[in-house]
Image (tube, rainbow, N blue to C red; front, top):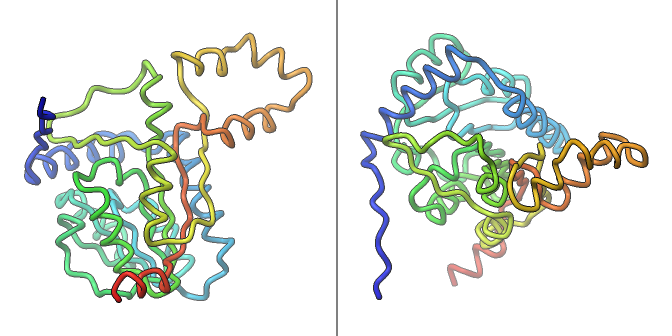
Length: 253
């Protein structure tokens, strides 16, 4: 029996969705605690690299809220599909260069960026392998990719996930999926999860208030949270990887 092909929304419908979402959630609603935690983790990884005035690309930058933070590190370019949101972001953040459009189509220089940051965008791409390949092509030899994405294992065990919106692509990945995707062209320096969540299956037990109270007698809250994150129970997968130039050269031969 043939596998039924998935019909993905046209790029125009995706653009409409992300214009609405960014306006309603980010511009009118602000940042939630998990988003702030992702940003803090991203900036701590960036700090660890100690690069001098790097060229930084923020892919899926939305309203540009993180781009402003990134200007403390180097020159920043932000891209997003949401064209009207990007127009407003440019007015708010004149020290950042913004481009609106499909990340796969925007004309950016190859091997130009020292760091590419991509938060919660991978799961909304139709061809995730091609997307990662494209990002890697924009990195300088030995450049870095810092990426976060929804953890499929956790999101499939939550009861508070919003329904998929009209025009939204939703392709969640597991930690293993992400590892396989990134390792084709990059050296993995960090692969972890953050912010434990989940209400069904094993996660109902792991995150139960009663169990966590009992464990609190022998483990600090921070240590318990870290243990959950290290075994893959965090809702966000975090990656820091480095472009493996020698691997790419072998591929071309």
